[in-house]
Length: 129
Image (cartoon, rainbow, N blue to C red; front, side):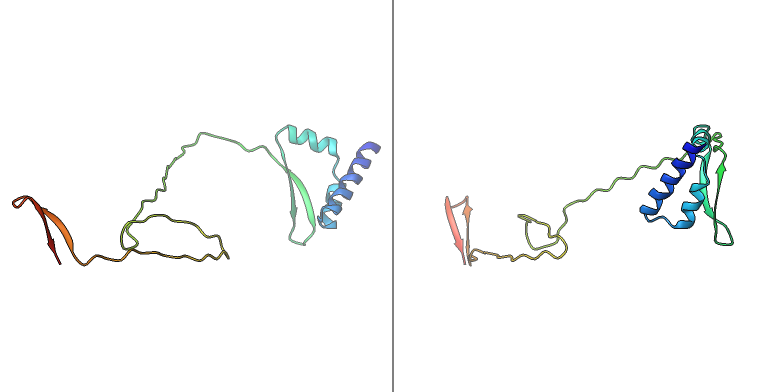
């Protein structure tokens, strides 16, 4: 039993170092580690709670009873598609993280006023401007 008390004291010291309130540490100091381990191995669950007076208490919950169940499984898929969000074809994209800044430069070629298309009846190109 002295070993159990020493183990309980080390648990209490460790809990205080972890920032767990003193009241909870006192609850754990009353627990016998060997009996707690035996009850957990038997399927019970340790439950530490605050009662209506504000003090911490503990009890052991019985193992959950699992009966027949009907489960519904739904599968969802998220997909993205490139859309039209500008004039013309998208050449490249990039991502900025929050707070990140960048400078963008755009270079364009001069536009032609006229165009040339082949004229099959004459055998040469016809220019329109």
